[in-house]
Amino acid sequence: MELYKENQLKIYNSLSKSKEVFETVTEGRVGMYVCGPTVYSNVHLGNLRTFMSFDMVFRYLLHLGYKVRYVRNITDAGHLESDAEEGEDKIAKKARLEQIEPMEVVQRYTVDFHDITAKYNFLPPSIEPTATGHIVEQIEMIKEIMDKGLAYEVNGSVYFDVVKYNEEGNNYGILSGRNIEDAIHNTRALDGQSEKKNPQDFALWKQANEFHIMRWPSPWGEGFPGWHLECSVMSSKYLGDQIDIHGGGMDLKFPHHECEIAQSHACSGVQPVNYWMHANMLLLNGQKMSKSTGNSILPGEILTGENSILSKAFGPGVVRFFIMQANYRSVLDFSNDGLLASEKGYNRLMEAVSLLSALKTSGSSSFDVVKWRQECYDAMNDDFNTPIAIAKLFDAVKFINQIKDNKATITSEDLELLTKTMNAFVYDILGLVNDAKDQGSNKLDGTVELLIKLRKEARENKDWALSDKIRDELAELGIQLKDGREGTTFTVN
RNA sequence: GACAAGGUGGCUGAAUGGUUUAAGGCGACAGACUGCAACUCUGUUUUUUGUGAGUUCGAAUCUCAUCCUUGUCUCCA
Image (tube, rainbow, N blue to C red; front, side, top):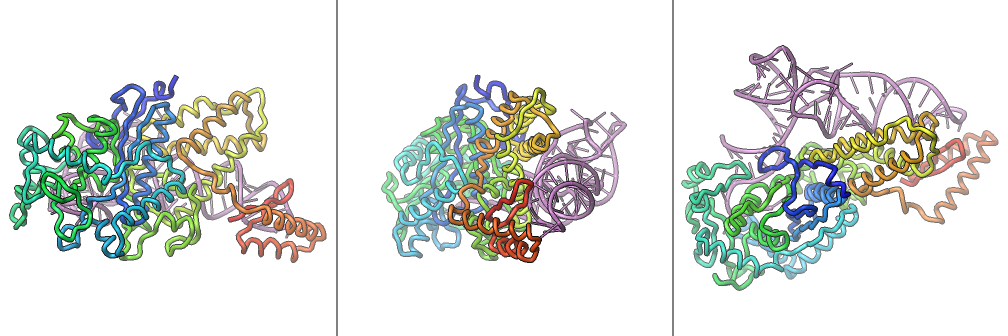
């Protein structure tokens, strides 16, 4: 029997602002859409957290036995730059500044994004569609909305008629809690020469001016799609008119997701998403991240240590563990101290996992493994509460260490269940990787073993000066010797 | 200004009315181990939940006020 049948998953739905029992549209299957990156620069650390949160969601749904179709798009067109005089596409602007083709920008940062997500052990989505690959479908969707009378054309651009949409009994504002009538009254005076009927209307299609590089032909002339449209189009194309889960960063709630609901609902007549999930923001040293103030770090720079924020390089497993120690709906503060603390805890967890295969079994267990396992699942079933799940894993860590020290016992049956559960949570669900692996080399190993041997001889001769010199100088090189009961081992930092 | 998410120990971060005298991790302290350390393991420790009122037999959890942080405000992920 699939695990999802014995686990009642609850998900916090941003639409209802409450935790709801998760019920899929189609039994046993989940359709999940997450707004992907805009590939005009390196993926942002805050973005990484959002994608990592949904990677964990994806992993847990798979673990529960659901057949999941996970769609995460690549936005390679359509986002407009604010500081430009005229609306300018971010990708086109970057291309103009670097004097290259827009598609070169897209290619470069798409490759970077895939590189980073692979390094951080993300599972690839089922489908990763691009906005530029769905221009035809976007034009079709605009036509459909126009046919329903909910969009209008002005000077080669098409806008969604928010006021009319609401007059027909809909609720633009349902997700973000905004009151459109108030907004209209508040902003009418400020809006001068807009060609829109109302300032709240948003673009479905935008006419390209003569300088705009990325452009496509359409029934309304040459132009490019509005940036909310692609997600509506691609989610309905690959997941249908009603999808189970739609995710994204908290900052996308308005206007992006609000517009998506309006567009999709205008076409299909149904609520497009059953469960809206929003991951919270990431702070850096208690402040929002900002390139201009230098309070910024790239995901790749964490791994290499080439940055001014952190005292050393951290492995992807540590970073992942750090992020998973907080709830995805909480604001998380990224800091050097936080990572150092996580590194310790992470090492302890991974040490215990590696001890599992060497544990001795007994006739009875002094720990209720079945109950513990259920508590782990209960944590995840409660809106993916990874911090609680990790706390439970540490209960097992303590138990494992006690068995090792002969202060606790476990039956072979329980050990099998414990091992299976630990591996499932650590590797499959949390997606942690063992950073310690593939460090060092045979040559290094041999060299250090030689030094350990020399040091052992020195210690036997009580030549503490020499033995400490070997130990301390190796430590300075990042090689730490560990004196145990059965000899000396070492780790490379 | 409006809308949204938050403010919990030395740090990080759970818990949304009683099973929590606030989980877990880190730190600190002690013990084991060690030639001494480090590593590792074991144990102990800290706060009364931004501030001020209120509801309740009972509140971190509900209500009101107030201060602060973060996000968004419609052609700026």
